Image (cartoon, rainbow, N blue to C red; front, side):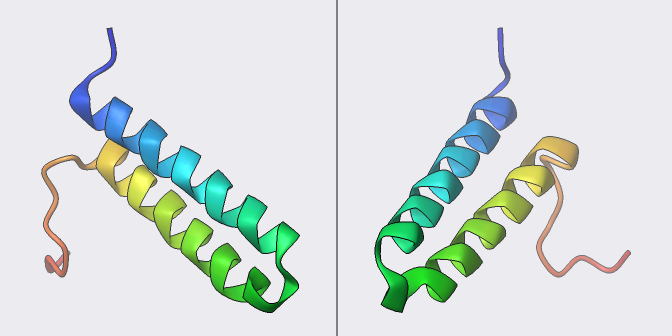
Length: 59
């Protein structure tokens, strides 16, 4: 059974795909939608790899 973090990460990746699809279908929005997708994928990785991490936390 998946954890909450795994489910959240999958939802974020699905949203990234959605943004990328919108960008492919609408040239004026392509760059912004691909950037949105990139950010959502990064956040998915953070949620999976460090679910209790803090944004802006010193490393």
